[in-house]
Image (cartoon, rainbow, N blue to C red; front, side, top):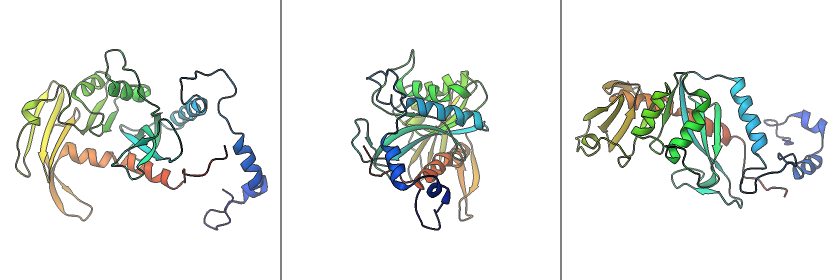
Amino acid sequence: MFSMDPLYYCPVFHYTMSGRRFEQLLRCFSCSYGQAVDPRDKLNKISPLLNRLLLNFRLTYYPSEGLSLESLLLFRGSLSFRQYIKGKRAGYGIKFYSLCTTDGYVLNLQIYSGKSKEGKGLSKLETLVTSLMEPYLDRGHHIFMDNFYNSVGLSKKLLKSKTHTTGTLRSDRRNNTKAVTTLKLKKGEHKWQRCGKVYVSKWKDIRDVLCITTKYHPKLIPVKNRFGQEKIKPEEISKYNDSMSGVDRNDQMVSYYSSPRKSIR
């Protein structure tokens, strides 16, 4: 903020206050306004600010049809709900469940602060996804999610709220169609089965790829990779790869602003 580097230099900060004054204000910064808070709520100090920001995010911009989910913010300090995710580049950090547009704009998010209770008639993941999607249900949106969230049950529930789903699927999810998930395929083979209005498909590339969708009828289509080479791929997988770029775009934008810094208090 107070850098003299020409790339980052912004004179308004130097004219407004000194770096020492900024540190003094940062030391006293609080979002809780001194009101009574629930000691069991680990996010009570930032919840008022976070809720206000999310409301402004939604009022400022209304998304198109496609939405996508998830993120992780690097943090190595002492925190009871800090997570370690082996496959993530950051590794340690604060886990965000972020609802984004396909170009990376954040619409809603929840910060993981420990185990949560299941909703009425819903699993924990179903409760999480429906709460994030609540402002956009019954409006014809299409959400793209990875295999951590997807299940046949969730797809059916969201479809009742006029919301389509597409994404990868874990083979051990409840209500999976065993006729597809247990198939042994040769490379390039593509099989699918319909479960009500939900399609579950399996495609053999280098390894098996299991997919679920309520939007696309599973079929093989020609697609081009970034080198211009044409390849035959299922339509649902191609659309998923294109639309999940919103999460990657969001992670890219966050990475430009350093979060691991020494705190004042």
